[in-house]
Length: 417
Image (cartoon, rainbow, N blue to C red; front, side, top):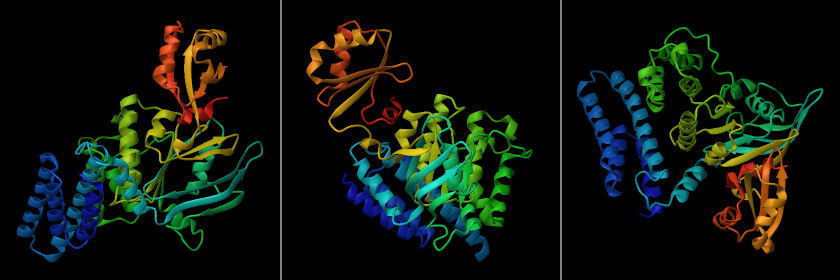
């Protein structure tokens, strides 16, 4: 299967669905047939087609048809997103070029910048966030990392408009292209705070989502359709009649995000969303965020902060590392580290001298061994030393290990003293 063929077909689908839900469903099914998708996806599309047939038979007025038709378009778009999501995660084709497809979708949404800043600075009496410069595009996830009290939350609040910069340039070309119309800008930015568990809503969660949509000017039939779409997308159907206090921490976060997404923001900001989640809930949230960023029907850009560095970098397109209030690193994860050098981190009860002695047979390829109470022990080697070879030598020479990892291109390397 050539990814170019699938890219062409999906691009054509986006054009046709705008013309008619009937054409959209038929074209979507044709793509699944052409590229041999599994029966589960085909059955979903057939059910959508059945819904459309019922609509054509039962609608008595044009207004009634238009309302249900609009709701159906949302369902079709959701189905398209699911189809693309499965492709991008190798659930349907093992042999497909994942990176080529992801690059296509990101590039297709990268034509316009959603947010950009340069020399962005916020000064306080005893701290300053300074000289921040980067851009965000549709389809991208930015992972914001750094030790505590280094300016992460300050930066998120500056992006959201909750704080205003002391100096520097800031712009939202896709939202307010000609000037900083803060009313318009804030109307397109969703901020899920770290204290999202606090909520004074006493009604059902379904009503909470309808209310959130209405506050952004989404009323009547559009409100019903949008809330139905968000509940379906996040798998919240069986929880929608519950009260906030009845939810687990993980589902409180899912509803907090759903409440912000129901009105289609262009920028989604999350401050430490992984902090109080168990491992399974963390992984589910990260998959949801990647799916949201990859969405074609509701494009957005996402920036989130977290201390869970390894989990965050798995879904991030760009990494921002703040140190002492400055941007110490910005870019792709693959560019972290020193060319030609591999970096490994270990945890051991052995002394530095014992580790160095154990590595004697690799002496010509060992650049440096560093030991820190905070960062653990780092072993820097030439890039011809693999994880397997280094681990074999350490174990053979009786170095007792409780942790071993290659962090050559990991954000963890940024935290090494």
